[in-house]
Length: 124
Image (cartoon, rainbow, N blue to C red; front, side, top):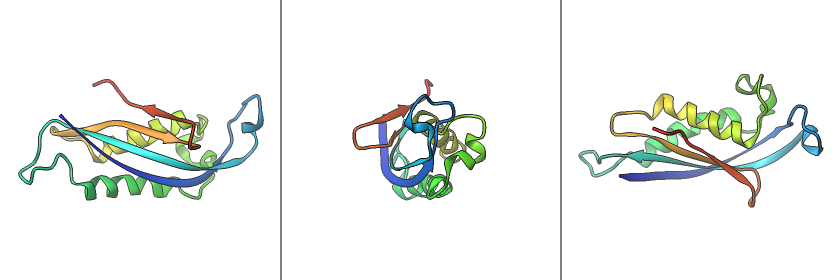
């Protein structure tokens, strides 16, 4: 079993609807993201998943979040763009392009500050 990962970042604004505090007001973060893919086997080149493919799939998702008001995106129209929901969103979007018999998304970690973040994963 192999864990293949990459990190990236994006900047965006959001607010948490009905939150009893400052986070209900619009504010922004420089989000950090780490994505881990689980590979059961290696391909003929000895790779679980080419880093280039992982980074390309992740870039498509991150580009949709970067420099946006997350509350205005369809993915967060009915739910708050919390770190938890952002991590789940990235994970679910990765499943659309990085799911095969050999590898699958394992976990997504989103940090809204250097000291606070969340990890989302699904049981197999």
